[in-house]
Image 1 (cartoon, each protein chain N blue to C red):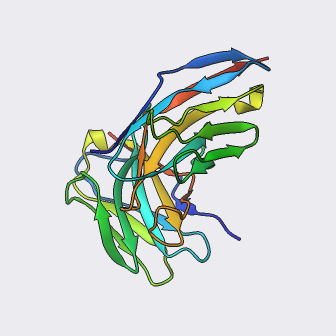
Image 2 (cartoon, one colour):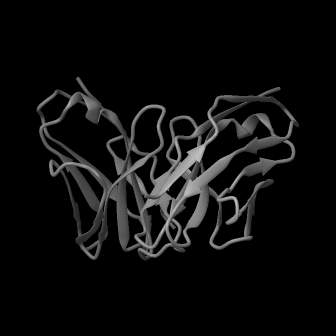
Image 3 (tube, rainbow over the protein chains, first blue to last red):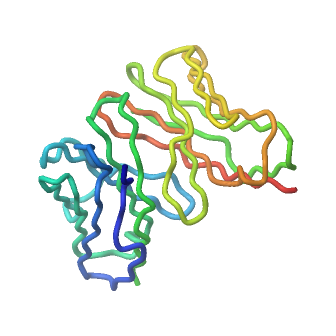
Length: 114
Length: 111
């Protein structure tokens, strides 16, 4: 089975720009969630998608938005980038949204905002 | 609210030493508890989990027991190897499905 893959691996953007990060879920998984991991910190939950609908959101502003496609791949979009958005962005997929379904993480996209 | 607190790192050990990384949590309800490991330049890998009180999760020589009375899920390994050097994250997951992570503990094992 293929794992969770994310692209690109690294990205440099300028403050005020927009960025799109992409994620392909593990085969058979229908739920995807995104996390932001600042340097030296634990990952913070951004939001979760199930059946193409957002069904949970963390404490992030509306300029963080997402999409999930029928093939369960996903995008994270961030508008009006700020310096503090520099972080590792992790995508995770699972079979369902329940607590016993383990999350499988990709290797992340390292975003640097200058 | 729900939260996870881990012991601060870095933790530096010699090969074959005993490892303990402390983790305590605050949660409503009955969350599942997890340990994830992150090797340099990589994403998170699930190391072990426990879904109810007194459950013991184990994998690759690592163990952790879900202690409801002390709200703890400490990670232990009897004999660490250089290859265990990584950052370890304790996390909880409730009915909402999202993971709440601790701040991570860096482990460095010297030969």
